Image 1 (cartoon, rainbow, N blue to C red):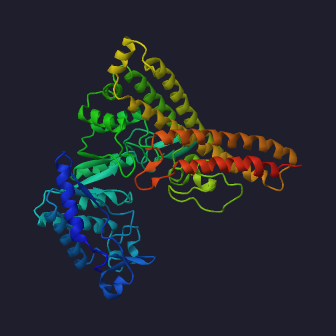
Image 2: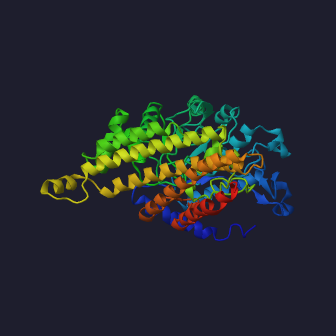
Image 3: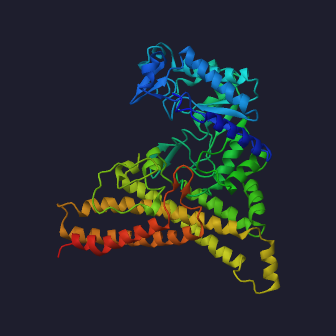
Length: 521
């Protein structure tokens, strides 16, 4: 289907230019491969022999077919030859999109792949990609990410992969946690706990056993624990994670996806410690803080980072929490006066789908944990602002004060960090508020609820709505002066100031019309 490949020559030329320009500043480019992508079913009316597993209106290009293998090999060769400065490729081969027949763990649906193990298919795919690189006589590296591999696949895949293929694993995956008395584990990227976790360590041990290089995948700036801030300054966890990894002989690191790539102290601390693994966590943080803020402010910021890290350990991590709860959109999510019956979407619109927000946590415990983090962050923020007011007078009134200010680094970084902490606290508090509002809403609108109970519930609901109004206004004023807030590269702005205005109007209408109409006359 030529229409799908239209303008490929232009894209290849632009990629070449991109690598050349970045090389001038010492940056190399790696391409993410999630290939071969599935094709619409009508494609296979012409090429039925290429068809693999069917998923909806698409089917995979079966990589057990020699023609598909040749197509992949030639494609990689073409890229490498036309983009000679390309540094390498990294793959996802068992998740994200339907690619090879075992990518969605449903290879039994293909007449060819049903007779082959997932390990054979995935290892063969990487072998074909590597052959394309070698045909071009390219120095590109190939990194195979174990994302989506079944636990029982890993050793067999690793043992079958060519030794030139490096193995990458998400560092913190499977770390056990207890939050609010609920047992859970890190199911994806998290800054909750410093890794590495048991799955990554096992994968790396197997990779070393079969003489592969090993890579760690982390999400250091921020994660889907709150993707709407440029970085989450829980930097003691990052420092300790760096120390732990520096002892394992890791060959390379991938430090972010679409979110969390913003220049931040998080990335600076990690790189500082990786470059000098004799540093303690405290020393690494202090070095970065001195460079970023100046020696007078550095101790205050390091203390704040450590306190924020401690409070963040209360965050109720679960895969449903990070993908379906309102933590990304924060107070911009309306308070719904009646059930919408809509399901929360992935990092998009949470609606009022409280049961799916909470994952493994009962809603009340979920709300309590979010509020603990919110109040902890607010405590750190208030203390930091008080200390900064003593250290950084807003209007210098003496030569001594002017000298103090001249010794400080860029003050905008300090104020930006304050905005980030404030925004995070507001999002966590709003997530708690929204959870409690929905639970109380469902109770107060229940026909069986007594009038006395309704009056009691109304008092609680009023306090929640008033809190939402207060923090939404605060976020509105903060986003006006710091436009990095509320943004994430793949979703763009989760909200803009006008959305926050709408939320305040939503809350005022609930207070003035909805709530009074629920109460006995």
